[in-house]
Length: 331
Image 1 (tube, rainbow, N blue to C red):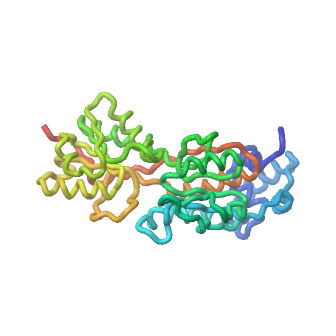
Image 2 (image 1 turned 90 degrees about the vertical axis):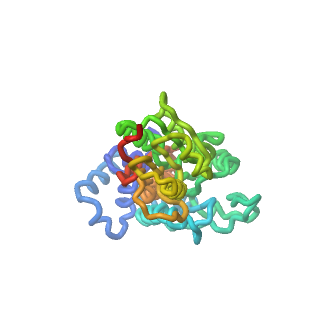
Image 3 (image 1 turned 45 degrees about the vertical axis):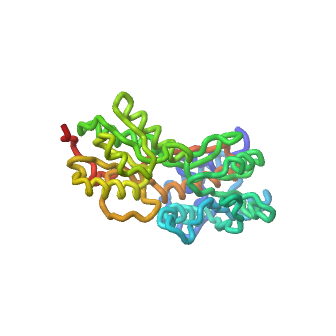
């Protein structure tokens, strides 16, 4: 075996890498958070493998400063999407505190062609040992440059390769959408509609792929999000909507036509609201594990800084029963 890393210790001890960091850093409160038996097992593996149990000295020797960067391609302080991004940031902060690192929010990036950029004349990326990237759509050229330079970074959200595999912690949208389609089919629905982009950012593409796979062999159409009235003319009895707010618009359009939801029409929303919605109805759909994605992103980033290869994780979404998916009684 080559150089032992914290990831190796975690695997051999049967614990998370965060637990190993807590034991090594002797963080305040670690004694109460980690059972004595678990702590002893980690320490035993450290002794048996000869791991250097002074992580601070190792970081200093490697020129590390125990600072993790956070870069967002979208404005999260403040904005209409603030509530959507807040759980991610909470998870990132909690996990960074656990591993004894400070966070550096990289806010100096200028707008170029209407979008923020990591790389610019005075970028401060190298102040951090590594970086967590947030945003629905990341710049592929910058991702490719980060990969080529070997800079440790992890994306919150699945990302396609960009000159090499990208480390990420994402949500398993495809499985969640397929399961919701199966629920609708079990309730007698045979005509489906998907309202959204269905392409572009990986999060949209993954949702749409799950929809296509789930409705294979059935009547299914895809419409852009602006066509709320048009989707009601398709004859679909189960409408799957990328954005919660668009689901609210379709619901209002259905009510204007005298359609009952879910009596005449079922509506399923595919994730948490990202912008204000004119309703507080409890849509059937799923919740994204946002805080856990943030926490695990920091865990993966510390593994990368320790020398691990690319790490890619998809976390399950939590299905929400809601009140907008019912049996298809339409003749």
